[in-house]
Length: 111
Image 1 (cartoon, helix red, strand yellow):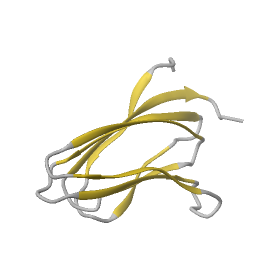
Image 2 (image 1 turned 180 degrees about the horizontal axis):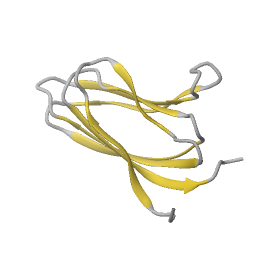
Image 3 (image 1 turned 90 degrees about the vertical axis):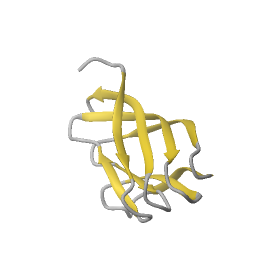
Image 4 (image 1 turned 90 degrees about the horizontal axis):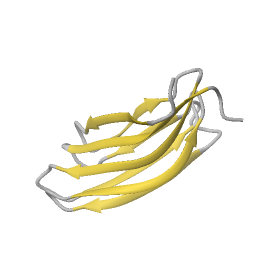
């Protein structure tokens, strides 16, 4: 596996609830670098981006949050390392929020 920027996950929310969106597979380490968020709904979306361990108990951290007016978007930069089993969770607040998460996929486990 070469080291380069890649799409880690892309999705559009089907409801306003939060959902696990991507899990780092065994044998990989991810670096979450950016989130592009576009609110395609007719109302304002209060969103939250979290990362958590597989058990959701050891650690859960809000990486970013914001409020997007209808029809508006934003790109948020970050630097978060995720190990195998770690999960990216997104709460969109409303349906029709499109999200594109980019970063780096590395072979091996972060230690």
